[in-house]
Image (cartoon, rainbow, N blue to C red; front, side, top):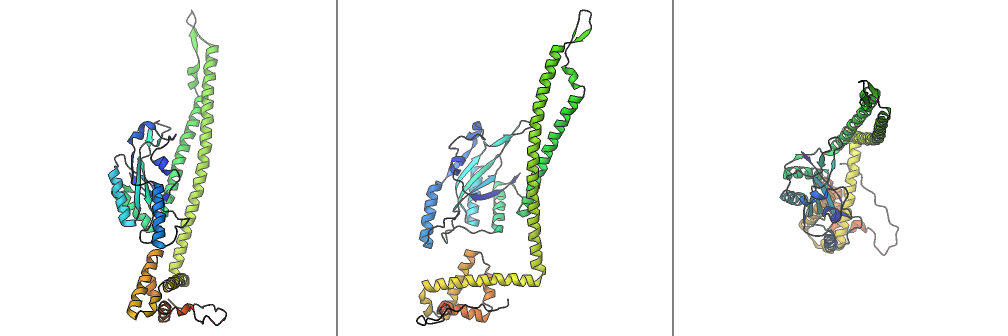
Length: 388
């Protein structure tokens, strides 16, 4: 059995849903006793702590568009325990800094199979997590390989098979849904054809009511026979209308899923073409690299200026201490913005740029080339044409 984990921004009614604080029409109440719940803290209380910590750590309020609380739905097995989910929570915190503070195991959701009338449970758990980076006070920054790591940890801790990763997995999932819908469509068509056959065949002979007279000859009882035919036609007509409605609904869903599939295929094709162009065309590769390196240089200059304004003691530092401070600034910038440290090493290979950046840190002169008392117009700083 495959599992998956998918974190999204928390919904306003999350606690009401997760802890079953009201009745929902899509659950089986008699199975709700099988659910399990755990919480370290309420969502509102945790948000207040996050906002206070962000203010204390960074000196700024938490941004209004930040998503400090997120919730994941995890596919589980019948025998998945709360301990399994605790283990997963610990791994998520150790590996990715994600701190889970609420868990709800749901075993009362699912659906009835239309064919077999069998209950198909939707076994899952909700993990509500604190998404704050304790080093910066801001929200955690993750890249695509981190989300892949989440899937690995989930499969490992729950003892289940890992779901399909990446865009291809999403595409296959959509195509799988189309396949299932097409199978349902075929089943409906078979039912309709079967009913048509029964209407046209001899099966309706069973509806004819006959009685023998005193001589032993059978005669059709017209009244009862007509009554039986009337009931049968009403039943089949209602079934046909129902199946036609289902057929139309499924056709619409199939068309919608096909459009999604085409969109996914185009997205994957475009990404592959772009990656191929970057790899095979040296001019494009060099151009993209230069754009990226220029953006890193700009970010580094802004960070140095910020440090210089808040720490004027840099002007009295010797070369060794300045080098250590520059290394620290680059490391912080790398961690906060997911910039590979090799990019900074590339920048410092250029001697002119190296001197400019250290001069900016120690003197601040690069941002104030003219004396303040001389009202000269500001000159636009030209970027050096540096080859990487």
